[in-house]
Length: 305
Ligand SMILES: C[S@@+](CC[C@H](N)C(=O)[O-])C[C@H]1O[C@@H](n2cnc3c(N)ncnc32)[C@H](O)[C@@H]1O
Image (cartoon, rainbow, N blue to C red; front, side):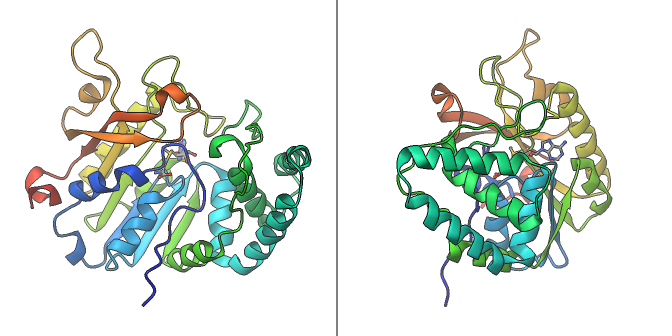
């Protein structure tokens, strides 16, 4: 039996690998028995929860993922539909890159970054450059400037794994049960029903003015976007969908209640500890408190086991 577990094919800020146990505790207690369930992730990012849940709960035969990042979603589609071609492209990028001196690697990286930012690319080029840049840039960050251009500098990994063939094949196999959408999170509202379960992981509200990694995309995600997301959660809850939403746990404001306690006062809020490994500011790596908001009651959650 194949014990290999598919995992995210990119490093992603806010990746949830460290929080999977907390997600598990918050899931509906009968999740493994539910039939015809659709799992929905409106902000899929690197997909840590998606890959984990599809392998942990084989009864979930259908999932829908969405993200606003066009290149990320193009990469998901290429892995789903053209993985062997992608593996060939990544393998040749890896062979070339690893044969270069460190100065040559930097030059090669900058050429590939320019190619990635050009408009003239096929889907297979977009996907292979997306993975190549993620594996060779500083800290695996994805950050864009106001024109939407990827602008992370070269990283200095000695032996980066650019072509992870075994994982890409495992991811491709899982994606066969996933519908992939590129757009705003509200696009996923039409799938809400009593047989849908949403895991919602938006860009986090910055903890302070200095900890502002908010630019996954040129659109950004400010407080009014957080409120638009709260309204979305209320609407899907009214349609009887289950949801869990993660966010940061910003310091209390003058009124004594935190931002999320105020806006989500009619939902359940739980504080959890998370280890953050990718952050542009080294002072913000380490253990931080996060919140999980849900419309699943205590008695319906795994936690009470
Ligand atoms: C915190 S990350 C998700 C992390 C993910 N759960 C993981 O494990 O890697 C947030 C994601 O939201 C996406 N995003 C930002 N604004 C969005 C919007 N309005 N609609 C949909 N996706 C958006 C970003 O591109 C990013 O991938």
